[in-house]
Length: 327
Image (cartoon, rainbow, N blue to C red; front, side, top):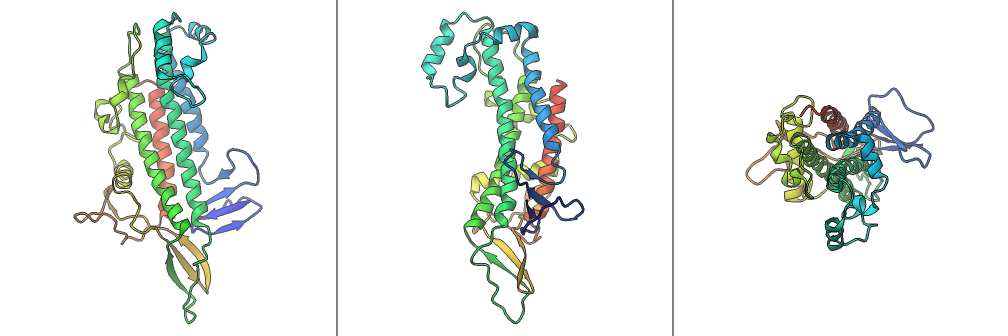
């Protein structure tokens, strides 16, 4: 078993560390899917359960007779659910449209619409997996020892250097991925809330999703907007997600030269870390075109676990409200 500490140091251990003030991710010695564990990661199971309920929430919203739905589902051709959704389905868009126009499948348009709505739910699951992967891989990457890790001042074995390396670039990419995926969840959650709030009543023709053009910027149209403890609450936390994603997407990088810092004590590496940019009330500290200031010296490893947990708590609360259809 390996433990990736908050300070970027990796150790081999053969037990769980329960009492420590330092955040840690443990990599278990097995091949199971959830082989990484860290404090308060049990929320992942609650999220999984609530997201699965969301599939049924959408189904119940569209189909009044559930027994009839499952009866129809049992005889639906596979293309209804797979065409235009998955790469293992080789049906072209022209063939898909032709089959729809020629079909006499009962409630076909309802089934097509439900599949499109549930595709959004599956997308949230994929994005959450990508966030989780980026979160874990950041700690794994920052723990990698670089050949450049040499402290030269022999008269003082204590000090900090910075390293520009492949692992530094990779760690920066993990952070960038994390915030872009988090923001994508905001977009998709908006779409699903829109479909629930403005649900279709008429399925006499094949329709596209009402939310096709809805993104995070359209959230003011939603009744859930502003709800406390959800992703829709107006707060510095959500503003921070927005600001970092926009900076990464529109200006391309976490900083000009991605680097990690290495702190030595008595000539030995005691900590590896990257820095989090200065922010004021959820916005990047800015002077004209300069937006990458790091004077606060906040470490990514210190703040990322808090961000990760709060985002998932807010997502869980949001989906709970959606499943109650209180929109």
